[in-house]
Length: 62
Image 1 (spheres, rainbow, N blue to C red):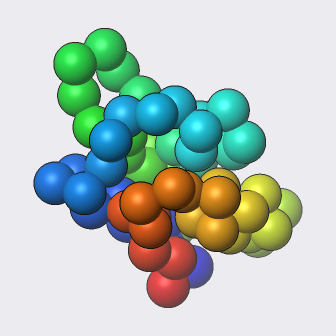
Image 2 (image 1 turned 90 degrees about the vertical axis):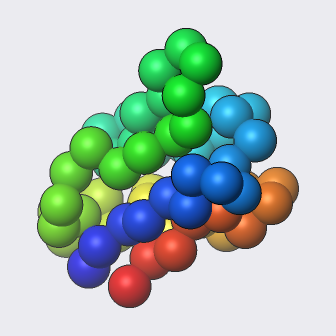
Image 3 (image 1 turned 120 degrees about the horizontal axis):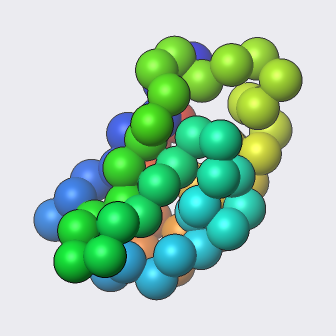
């Protein structure tokens, strides 16, 4: 499973790293991005929860 953040869509709200900080990171002035690839099995549900919670649907889990 892989997580992809569409940087042009991301509004930098910080929700994804607050839900799953082991997979997503948000640096000041930048869009969120995935910091692990592939997503570890133990974090699949949290990564999906972050994607589902994104207010602009900028995260793709595949």
